[in-house]
Image (cartoon, rainbow, N blue to C red; front, side, top):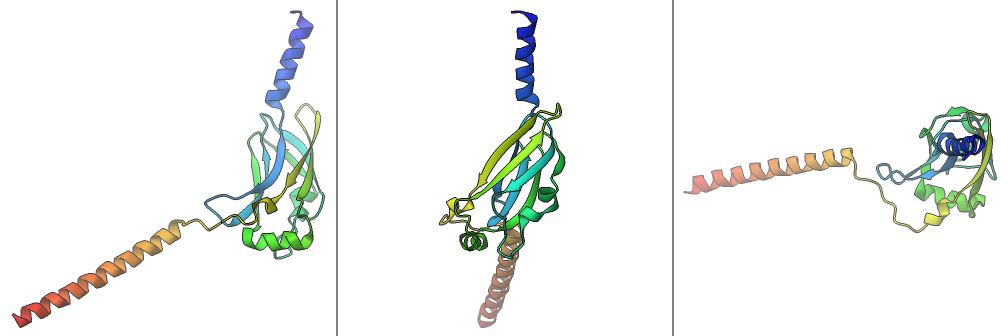
Length: 177
């Protein structure tokens, strides 16, 4: 193998390893269900810079807030390191579904993402966000720490009431004896 071929192989391998791949999608974190977030994530092995977003239609919440108007979507992002992500709350799933049906993007919202790697090579990917695919799924809230604390307090109150009740019954039985 000659030097030119070796350089081409090494260059191709480094492009795979060191190129950022910026994706956008929605995410339902099981610890936060039924809340839905929109997440911009660099899933590639390298950094991405000069990131631009173009939405096929506005990404709107049930309150009328337009997420696609957030500054980092409108103005773009300067840099996103490998593995880095930016997360923004979108809506609760139950409230989002009627909003999506009402606003029309039942086929999803296409987001074109343009960016450069650190060597100034340009990339363009189109990601389609389709939350309506999950319509009809049972999505319930996660029983978190607050729920656990409330349950422990209820158990404690019940045990205390039961202890008082048994104490009173014991005193009454002693009096009768």
